[in-house]
Image 1 (tube, helix red, strand yellow):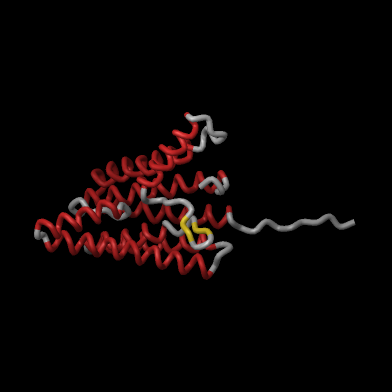
Image 2 (image 1 turned 30 degrees about the vertical axis):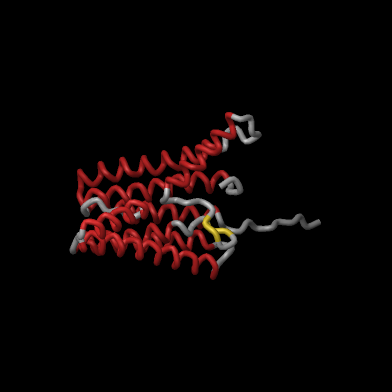
Length: 221
């Protein structure tokens, strides 16, 4: 995250908010499962297996696999187009979210959650460099660990005294999205999900604009 330009960091915070929004809708609508928080779904998987709840275990496992499939898809896209993959990946996220919203309108159920998990897995490929994800947009545990490490370093006199603020902003962005998502779901139900592809489309356009190659202008004498 240290090597990421400030405008892209601001965009990462908005993408984290989108993940929080989607996660809140999934959690409040479909029995406490998650669209982006795979640690939570892994816990549900283990609890389901331990308690003999086959349905819960199967649902959690399906969500994990759907999320991983999204990560695989975004990685393939990033390798196929290494220089300007961000808007392409984000366009796929928008498409998956729109499909999820359409399915939710016609026949809400677990299939919606699988599409949302795939979208969130794909979103994690937006910030991808040298085969690795540089900013985790949906797993806040890693951001909080980095926050603690950077804050400890600042307290001990490291030169980077404010590096922890980026991770705090990322976490706050996610939580803000959760708050908006929960409030929207309680007011509009599944119809609130349409806000996600609209917002994702706006972020796609921003990414396309921010990553567009700058013309190399030379003075002609």
